[in-house]
Image (cartoon, rainbow, N blue to C red; front, side, top):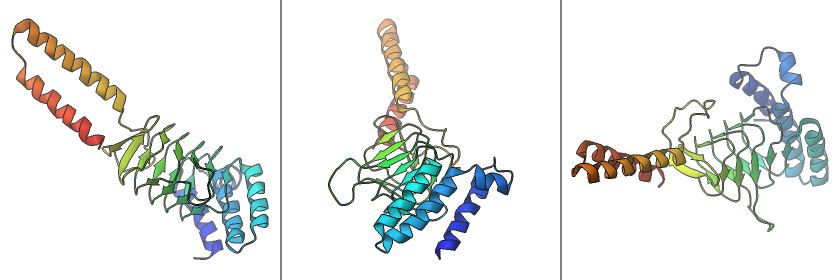
Length: 231
């Protein structure tokens, strides 16, 4: 697919993904994310052909106009949607697959000053919530979700969820609709509730001289589920 077709597809992706879009006027004047991709696509073409100074100049113009910093050396697939887009940073060796949804203030950054691959690889269909930081040469698997404001510093398995600082990677138990990235497991809260209920069960057993077997089995089941999600 040629550059023009990819750019047209970028604009069409906004129409498919944002229910707030009401007109073509809004598309052209109120969506910095699609324009950031436009400048990136052009700059990346020059970068690939060895005209790196021109590529960086085009990239700088795009950054000034959109407040989105995408290095022209990054590799970004098709139908990527950067919603709201303000403050998004994508580093030089980052790789972003197809159908990825990125919200504002997201950083795909590096943690090393050495040359070579130092930014994350984001596979197809990933959703990255607002403010999330995905750092280093790690891989976020297909259809995974990154919770808002999470800091991800290790690999995320396909179809799983990463939440927290640093992010805990859990098995995916939520829906398949990418926009509903607010439905995330709260690992710390679940563990806190489990510990309280375990203490209450033990106190009751000490006072009464017998243990509630039904409650005991329920807590065992929840403990096993917690451990399994953290694997």
